[in-house]
Amino acid sequence: MSDVLVVSGGGDVTVAGEDLLVAAARARVLAAELQEIARSLYTAAQDHELRILALELDRVADRLWLVSVLLRAALDAYSVAEAGIERSVETAIGHGAYWAGTVAPVALALVPAPVVLGVAGWLALGAPGAAPILAQHRARLSDPRVVAALRLAAGAVDDAVRGAVRLPWMAAVVADDRTTGLFGRERLARVLLGALPGPVPAGPLRLRREGVTEVPPPGTLAELGARIPPPREGDPQLRVERFDGEEGPVYALYLGGTLEHGLVPREEPWDMASNVAAMGGAPAQSQEAAVAALRASGARPGDPVVLVGYSQGGLIAARLAESGEFRVAGMVTVGSPGGAIPPPEDVPVLAVEHAEDLVPALAGPVAAGSRVVVTRSLYDGRPPPSERAVPGHELSEYRSTLALADRSEESRVSRVRSDILGLFPTAGTGRSSAWRAERIR
Image (tube, helix red, strand yellow):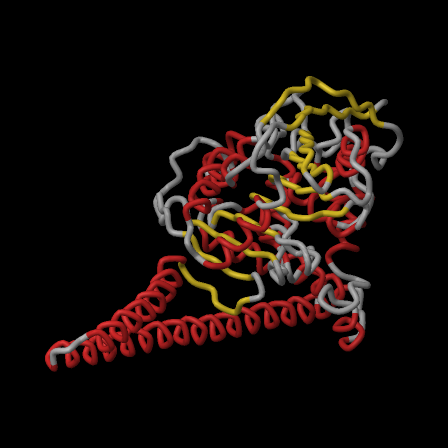
């Protein structure tokens, strides 16, 4: 299991392991310190040899400074080249998918096959008898190469569909997710929602509070992760905390992951219907429940809210931030399929993903922007030890990665960590309430 974090986004072009970025930063700091020592020594020295030593120290500092500059420049150049290659591959796959869909509907079935299989597996994870079969192939499902391929294929499904319906080439380009989104993945997700068996979920929800406790303010990312409700059937899916500071209340909303994986909507709103709805930008009842829990806890539109979500909870957090219904002041997501939803530019966002987790890949290429993305490889090419179908998606593993992010010295991680945790008071206690939502049928 690797403890190396790869950091990207946050308005920075560099994509690299935090150890290299930290090494460059430390070299620069050490160079500045050596220069200061050299100047002081040269000023105070009466002996000629000491002054020569001071000059040598200054030369060493200059070389160290140059090493830091060259290392950072090399990382930037590598990142630009890597991003260009990834963008070219993504564009080529999208164009190929469009023309394959145009030439023959049969090709349409072949081009996005990894996506269809991936979505089918995701939908069926909780279906009776499906989990053991998927668990037998967990090594393939957890292969970072398969996850990366799935991410690229997920970004090309809409291109293939536009080709299959004979949308003209220029119109297909205009209708892409990255431009107008008129016929992009969000629209396709809405079509999938309409094709689900049974009625599209709508109507009233029953929301009940299941306990109120006093809690200290969270002081680490690991503490935020520890407060996410674990995905257990019948348990609360939401947790709301309120902390009263000098400038007024601050709220934290913790959103759990999917609980019902079947295709037919039932009483559980944290299901696949809500997943597909949220992916498509349509009203999701899990989002409706989250809004209701915040309001019932006293949150008003102008109050700052920190969103912390796992899996579907991260997707709902991204939609809440996009909606503007509350003043989202910070966001942390783990294992979220909401990476394609651009975050507000003024909101600090930390997204944690595992290289072996196929769930975030279902969103397609990540819209980084102001979002700082931390990626970790759990198994370094070895077979996953867990018997679960997608062990890289386990909440316990993401909690461990958040603990690593707490110790990270990489500047973007440090900045977003400080910005988010700094929203909470440093002393006192707050009120925490757990919430359980159910559909009324």
